Image (cartoon, rainbow, N blue to C red; front, side):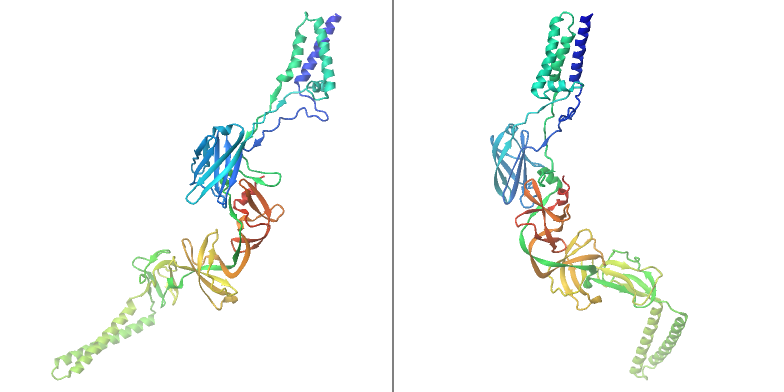
Length: 548
């Protein structure tokens, strides 16, 4: 009976040890028995870079292949029409590419760790560059083993078995438990094999419960480095359309911004007005619509003067008198002709002349009553404005139509000082559109002491309208020396200071705080913070600032 109780006691002890091994361990000071496995590591693919004054090259190893990014060094624009040849350990290889993709070659040797010296030749119609690069493919790091289970209940013994307590104490604890179990088994090996199985599970279960940490993933990812530098792979730079410009010291003419509006060229525009008051009526083809093209001399409308009752009575009286005079003269002329041999010829001719004049006056009086005034186009162009409507009464000198040549437009700007003969100017429209201007002249007086300045618009003028407001950016004689950058290149940093991004390496960008002054409507002059020769990001800087 006592023997049976002892056997039961040992079996219970072994069961406790087995349970403690396979259940999670309780954490105590200095330990985290339930810590999650380490996260997957993201590392960049093996890469190398080289550059000259015209070409920037980045070589990236992708397994058994190489990707070659060939860009313009100053602007960071991809060079897609080049012939790229690579001198590799297996001999020269010509790189291939497709639209929007980097150059690519097969490189089985790149899948093996090592240091490889390459020579890349880039040839275009205007470029011939030889760029040596050294590509280092590192040895793959072994994946560490991470235990996935721990002790529960008997935390001290579990830690001892798995090496989480000092080596001496762990050995004593494990050895004591194992010695008692072996002695009991030697005395009772014929009675039960269950304790032996439990002991085997205790000593071997730990190894079975170990697992391997996930392997590192090779993937290029834009990220902000601890020193504040931003790493952006070339593939991401092309997606973000990052462009740069070389900062150079030069003398830049100062400009002024003037308010202006679009006006028609006075030599290519005109008005159609009514000379007398009357009722409007359309031409045979109808009133011309807005935007319709017309030719000089083309009839656009008619104006019929209205007649009051007194005017009609007067005209009728004048017509009756003229008819009576015409009848008298015709009879006298008939008598003269019948007495041709007696009446002098001069009297006959005078009577004929008098009769002709009376008939012309009578015809003119009828025309006044019946024929309206014709409104004709003074120039070739299009109808820019119209107030015509059938039956409308047009007042004297009222503008019925405005005709403009849309290919000949001017801008009238206002300024409080004379600019002289400004040679270069441009008009900036809402939405960013820019139209070049040619100086035509300036007035001596103006409304509110502002001097009107006229410019002729050049280039494509489609979509512009008369009266449209614009901003005129005109150069003046004064100049300033410094680094000029587009306004889009300057951002506001976290502290509120103005910053720009330098393209410091092929895939690295660094922020610089700068102090700027307005140069013109599109550029600023950098007063402090930059040096000549830096590559400054002019397109995509806002996207770079969002990378964390």
